[in-house]
Length: 370
Image (cartoon, rainbow, N blue to C red; front, top):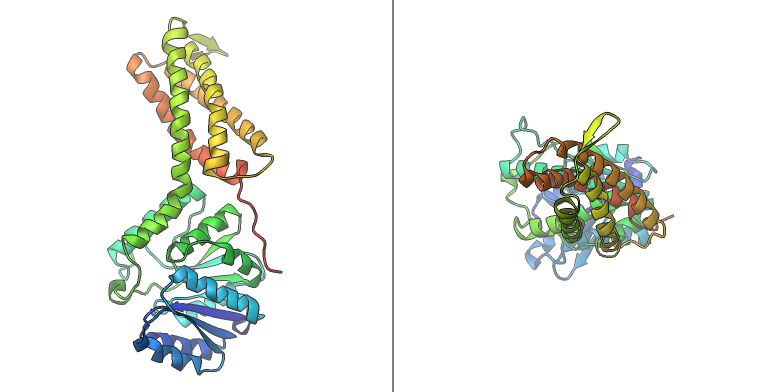
């Protein structure tokens, strides 16, 4: 997409001279509009905004009080939707971490295809420009996002992002007023199967990122609360179901079928009590688990969820039952039967979370701008 078809949206709080310098370079690169959102900066910083507002192809919006980066981005998106016909939206930070060549790079990669482009910095150990705490935080967040949402994003906290106009309504629907908004954007894109693509950009940190408005404890809590929110609810529902499942399993294995000998199926030895007790316990706990996941965890209204859940539950039960039955045959110490089952269930636990989120209880599609 040509720069003339794109707007660069810059949320800003208490900027310095780097903001007007960056805007001047963007104007020289012939971007269609530079939109700056002043997120409640005090009077001493208004000179920077006034300077920018006087330039052609620039516009400044103001929040009377600080409302947060997410709120500033949505203010900008709403303005672009209502007052422009530009086809490309690029968000950038005002602290000098995003260069004009990188901004142009995202514009060139942008098309009418509904996807989110992420300007991704290099957080590898070979890059000396990255402060250790930033490297660790980004790598940790990327790993957690990969496990829970199925996408490896090398830079989940980048502020340099681009998307086509058709995704504006979707971006306006994303919740979160502060730094957590950008993480929620990634989570919602993953849930609604909107492609996300990393575009490599330069890694720049000024004085180890001392000028950032990111609060390490408060904003990290908001981000991880979003990142892990659904998973923690899923964990709570699973613990309740686990207690029911293992109570029934214990009764079946150590009271009802405790003296039954092992059996052989197709030449493979199996523990009879594990083979029979596992499905009985799961039949008792599965209905409860479905109701909790549907109403409490994923808050789904999908009419086909029960059928998909049954299919997943049956497949999971078959895998768990035969794997436990086979491995339990080799366990000769009673105290190890239940721990073995727990290990198997933990592995299936992660797999089932991903499948339930993506297939059984899929997120409702948001409307998009035409």
